[in-house]
Amino acid sequence: MTIATDRPRQQKPLSVDEFLACYGSDNRYELIDGEVFDLEPTGLHEEVAAFITTKVCVQIDGIGLPWFVLQRGLLRPSNSGMTAFRPDVMVVDRTELTQELLWPDQSILTLGSSIKFVVEVVSSNWQNDYARKVEDYAALGIPEYWIADHAGLGGTRHIGKPKQPTLSICTLVDGEYEIQQLRGNQTIVSPTFPGLKLTAEQVLRTGG
Image (cartoon, rainbow, N blue to C red; front, side, top):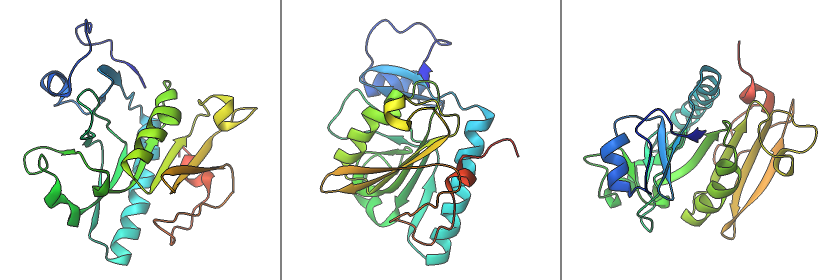
């Protein structure tokens, strides 16, 4: 994820409303503290997001939960006027949508209570995924957050040394995330989807 450069150069921090006016129809951008970022949806990035979406949808359907998967919808925290995240994958609870005032007209969520599970697939600006979003998603009360670093781009403090593809499973405990790093054939244990039978390598694998 990089700062957007292929649009008119940003001269000042944008509000969410200004961001929506300029970028709202293009789901490759998000806004963090008034700064516009390009999500860099490369083919490999999309493969990882699509694989996770497919597996999660099977779990939702099998259990019969009133949830659905939203890809690249906006998450606009209600306490911020200059941030609108665009997670790669969000699992949304239909029963909570009556509290979402923007939802009937726009693909925008504002409440963490509407979201059961969220995924970010890491691109070049990995700092937002490993730092800012860990804090903000926890503050919103989102129970489970995956950071899928298929290219091993994150800093060594986050994925170790030598760098390698890593799946970080962040589970909310007492308002903060406990983070487990998985690699290779290590098995995923998901509190939200205990029926998942996957390894980190299966999630992070790209290119066929």
